[in-house]
Image 1 (spheres, rainbow, N blue to C red):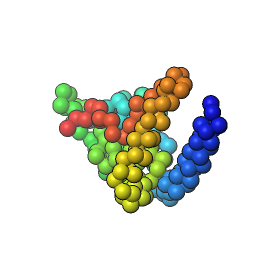
Image 2 (image 1 turned 90 degrees about the horizontal axis):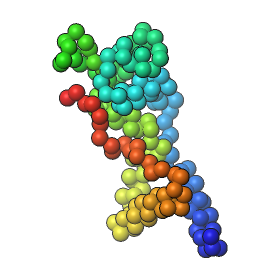
Image 3 (image 1 turned 60 degrees about the horizontal axis):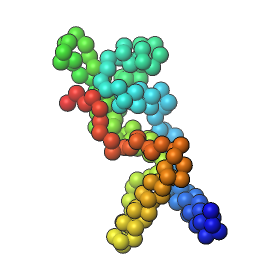
Length: 164
């Protein structure tokens, strides 16, 4: 690695740190989901609609505990219950649009609103260059270290198992 590349890496690390400090999420304690609630939302997002019993089995938790968490999340509009079309005796639990949005927001490190406001002040060519440069850096990481797999988890990935 050349001296210029070392200097560029040091400058990037400096700017990355400043970017993180400026744009990281600053949620209050009460705004965050509990670990158990987050686990239920994440599991449903990955597995698709399940009954409370199935979710409890998958999460290795007591059915009563998962039922309480589901009731709380449904009360906040993050989950809803649907009758299983294949077996009307079963009630499935699934994320609402608000639940998907909350899960995406919870898994995001950066404050999208603050970042959008700052990006909006940049001229379009500068914004495009910034995003293209970051995309190129991410792509180059696979070349630089093939042991690092590309990140396939993205908030914009399609929702699996949506019963609607």
